[in-house]
Each structure stands twice: as C-alpha cells, then as structure tokens.
Image 1 (cartoon, rainbow over the protein chains, first blue to last red):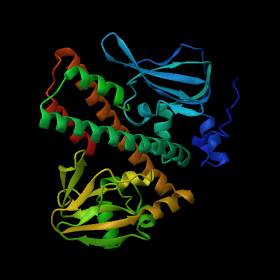
Image 2: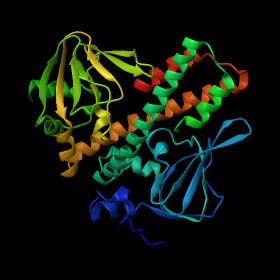
Image 3: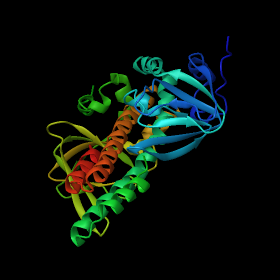
Length: 175
Length: 176
C-alpha cells in the first residue's frame, strides 16, 4: 500500500496546518511519469489535479492543424490540472513529462466535494491556486491591451497583414 | 442584520456565506456614495478596497495604446448588485481598467486589508470567497484563450478574419 505523501515544503501547501495537509494527503495517490508520457491529452479528460514534487513537464497545444505549439515548460514544485478543477474537466492543452516526474494526484470530484462542504483545507489550496491565476490574469491583461492596440492601429493605418498578425498572436499570447 | 449586510447578501459573490461570515467582511466596511464622473477605481493604480456596487451605473474605461480611452462596458447595479476590484484580493495587481460613476452610485467599501487579515488568521469566510474568485478568474482565462485560438485558426484558414468582431469579443470576454 503506498504511503501517504508529504506535502511539507511545497509552497502551495504552506498555509495549511499539518492536520489540513494530512486531510488532503490522505486523498492523494502517488504518480510517476516517464519522459514523453502524456499526463493530459488535449481534448481528453482532466479529472485529476497533480501536485508535481520533482521533474519538469511541457505544455503543448495544437492551435493550427498539424502544428503543435509549445506553450510552456513547468518545473516542480507546481500544480497542474487546476483549470480542469475550476472549469470543465477537459484538457485545453497536452501536458507531457519532459523528465521523470513524481507527483501526487487528487481526483477533481473529491476536491470539488470538499469545496462544496466548505473544507478549509481545500479552500486554502484553491486560494493559492487563485493567486497564481491572478498573476496570469495580470499578464493576460497586458496581452489583451496590446492586441486591442494593434487592432486599433491597423484600423488607423489600414496596413494589415493577416499572416504577420496571426504569427504575432500565436507567439505573444500568454495562454 | 444591518442594512449594509442585507445589501451584501444580495450580491452573488457573497451569497454562499453565512450571516456570521458576511459580518466578518463588514467589520471595517464603509458605505460610500460616488457622484457622476468620479473615478471609483483608476487604471494602473492599486485600489485599497473592493467595491460592492449596490445602486447606480458605472462605466468601465481602458486606455488603449496610443493614448485613447475606450469605453469597454457599462454595469447597472440597480439591476444586479455587483462587485468590482475583487481580483485585487488574490494579488497585489494594479487595476486593469478605470471604473467611473455614470450617475450617482452607492457602494460598500471593503478594505483589502480586511480580507488579507482574515486570510492570515485562517478565517474560512475569506478562503471561501477566494474559491469563488479563483473560479471566475479561471473561467475568464479559459474563454479568452479560446477566443484567441479561434482567431488564429480563422486567420490561417481564410487568411482573413473579422478582426473587428474578434476585438469586440475579446473585450467582452475580458471584462465579463
């Protein structure tokens, strides 16, 4: 039987008391992924939230047919699957292990049930996730403002090259 | 329950809290009135409070690169009491747009410090509110991502897309 994982030292769980950490840890299953393994596949289910304790993952999305666009590389300690938890349990992008990855997985449904029951441990975890989303939203604000500015300037000048604009959108958007 | 707390109960972001939990948020809250034209939140500054708008109309404005000011949306608090500035509870971010009173606006100010103190003290009400804000943020980010992906695909498919419509959808998703 796998041992209960330790969540000590993982920034996301710093605000939790030892009892709250234990409450979440009891629901977690250890998981390992070899390099190249899919953790989520774009369009597929995203029903488990993983807390990565070691290794790195890559995030890819097929924005255009036949072309896989690399969106990000993320290194432990971090969490993946948070968007599936807070929105729909469907992966918007693929996540693959770049190196050997060790993680703890917790089922989305279990976590949502805890949140519905106002579990303080679950709410604290989501608070930390929310802080990372707020940072991402701040970056997105900049991207949106810049995009709108480009579109306004295009209107003013009338010099618009769809290929250039599409490429810029692809490379500059934060996802 | 005081009148201010009663008004808070009608706001979607706070409706899941118990009366006692809402009272915690009201400890340092203050009622405020903004006359037409007053900036309730100014773009690029860090608001010190969140604002529960309980009556009146506000406009959301954004500076577009090039110095122009663009009206992004109007919110009618008479129809639906609403909250602005809540994202600032999860990070010390500057306001991404200006919220300006379009007429006489009544609001309840809840200092961000109240929320952060409640977080430090481990108060469940603050974490429950965080969960709701995080969910809203995640939904907003997802919709924006989808909008941009769709525009890129359109550009590739047809070499052309209705960029005016794209811009407008982007604006709507951004502030909704």
